[in-house]
Length: 310
Image (cartoon, rainbow, N blue to C red; front, side, top):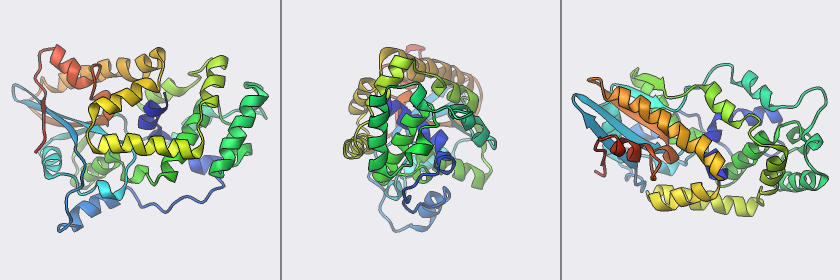
């Protein structure tokens, strides 16, 4: 499930403040900087990103489906002009969620209380494995052990992306969200914060928790995975991306985190296609591409999504 979690864990960027990470984070910019970069670097060449963008028309309605990566780098920008044109022409931005002010309180559900730690739920061998990985990243294990297994996994994912130089500040979701704020474009969500958190709350049985935590790879291996996934996204390599996503999850996890959500998201998109408006739907790439993605589901329902490449 690691790559799927990579598409979701931007929900938990505030985590580093909560757990008191002992490593020094890389300098990052505010989420608004990608937008500034887009505006000010007029002479800069377009990034090499090959966007996962489709256009769906029905009657007077138009929906753009854009498969995002929640973490990025400054070199993702400026985006190709046809992506910005699609966004600018849209009446409404649609993302997976809209972050809520009480996020910190919601994250407390992923922390043990009253002196309990994850060590009460895992073997000494697994605890030793986590300690070793924590040392590689400079994470304070005493803070880490108060998290449940799901949050521990997300923390290591966060750290692997940071170590590879990626940040939510330069994620494509953040870019479009900030652009929508600047232009006062309507912004709605396909899901709620609670529904996404529920997917990750007590997701594992005891045995599954042991297995997933023992799968946490070394810092070197994790960074290599991050770079491979990022390269495939940059190249728009749908087949390679889906291969990584599927291989990193079991059947049950894939169904709950990807397939079932795609069904619900597609239903929302169908509602948009019954209007006379234009929508720009920016969601994690796993929800757009592949045989179970929204593009495929819309085709099955008789719509004709067209890949936009220029």
